[in-house]
Length: 257
Image (tube, rainbow, N blue to C red):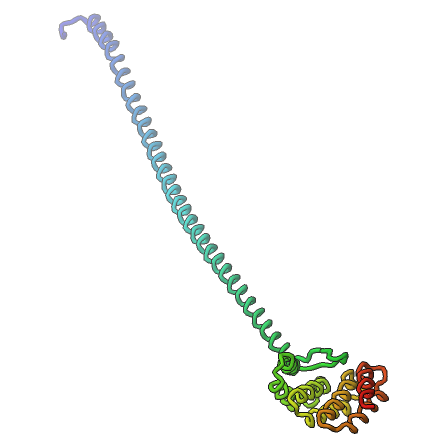
């Protein structure tokens, strides 16, 4: 090469230069491609990491949301359970209230019934109206029922006890009348006369008064007190001329004459 002519050497160098230039260009292009690939890989990795981070965030949020939903569902179930307990408590309270009201009503009715047993009641006997205690009414009706059964001994005792127990009773005139009749049936004529006279003295305008006078005359007849009986009959006709007892008295007087 040292012996090569300069012109030839220049030609060889020029040719070598032309050959070397594409090689350097290719090398440069490969480096650029590698750098581009590396950058792309870097960007892809960054994006992957960003996507992974976002996915993790979404998964965390989803887990938190699921926990919140589960907690909310638990609270809802607790509220439902509390509501059911409250409804049960309300129903129990309503039942207990209804039972208390029923018992209060029963107690009130019982008290009212007991009070009614002691409250005076209006009664009408022999055309006379007055008030009487329930016990008083019951005792009189029991004595009268005994008389009507024909048990005159028990009736006499019942009316005697009634008059002692209720000395100011509105039943007194009627009780004296039936007591006298029971005594008459038991042949206690003197006792009967005494009670018939007590009736006339107590209530001379009583509807039973004319019958009481006639009964006195009957007792006197049984006692063989005919003069006294005639006078009693005369007094009856004069005192109660429009009564049925006066009609009977006139018939009896006609027999005496």
